[in-house]
Length: 224
Image 1 (tube, rainbow, N blue to C red):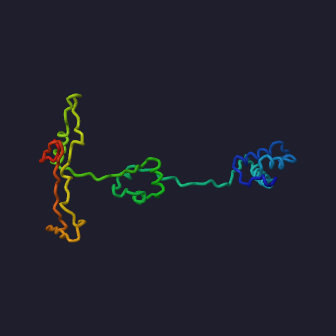
Image 2: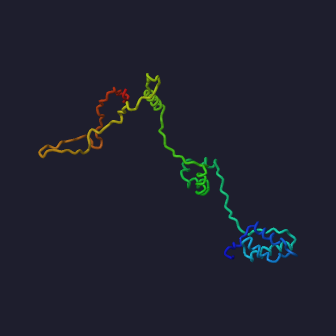
Image 3: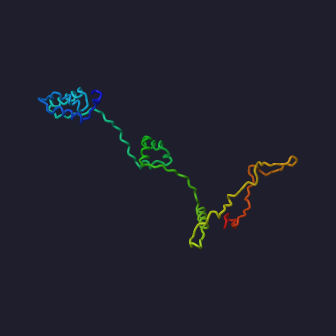
């Protein structure tokens, strides 16, 4: 029986329920015979605990108060989370928002709270890539290149972009005229070739001859 008894850590509702149960059928302010045993069995606590509850109830009755017992059990009290302030985050310089630690330092909160904000969707990660700075001349040249890439499809009667398979960018077809070191197979009595250039660090670059079937616009370096 004692093994099934709970620890004497009852809630306010349970304490008042025990007191009301003892008062039922009591004579001259005393519980009926066997009431303590029945209360112990019903509420799953020891008789000692039942006597304590009854003693507190009697003290309130003698002072003329209604029975109102309160539990001394301490409830867990967590500190309230600091609310998210959107304006505060936006006022922080962008380069100081790279990590949770930096944000927590600037907003004077814990790093864990910043992670909670991110999980809740209040802040979002963003990967920023640097963009090239285009001058007005660059923009015009890009626009011209885009317009020259258009062609009219007579069969479908539509304007579409040329296939990239018909375009060769000659600027990217530069090759070194020779290598700094070369390997050859010679006969035993053959003279070794003598190779030279003005500087080994700056070997002359050349463009190989193009033998495609399409005519090439040399000025624009694209196949017409």
